[in-house]
Amino acid sequence: MQTQDILKSPNRQKFDAVVDSSWNQKENSEVYTFIKRQLKYFNLEQELDIGQILFEGCIRGVSKIESGQDIQDPSDWLKSTCFYIILEHIRITYVYSSFDWELTTGNWEQPSQGHAMSPYN
Image (cartoon, rainbow, N blue to C red):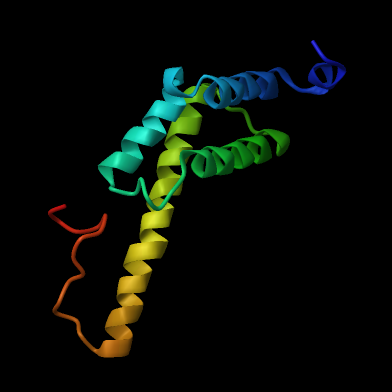
């Protein structure tokens, strides 16, 4: 155990262990495969990188722990947080951009086709 690990709370150490296994064991990691499956489901494999999503989830987890909040199950928390990060991307990229297009063109009837928010992918 390194000196810096001694200074970390047990909650942070558990969280770091989940993150480390997600980075190092990739295909065997529950979190990594969950993110990969969600990107495939939403057809975002070409737009988003698993590492980007995992990194953002790590930042949010560390911020939460450092603010004094507890994460009971780091693996489940990280999976749900990464899922919401993907949904945020969809909302920002597709819903808002579609709304901007409708505002600028005045076309309210024609839905956008072929993206993650389409009813039939």
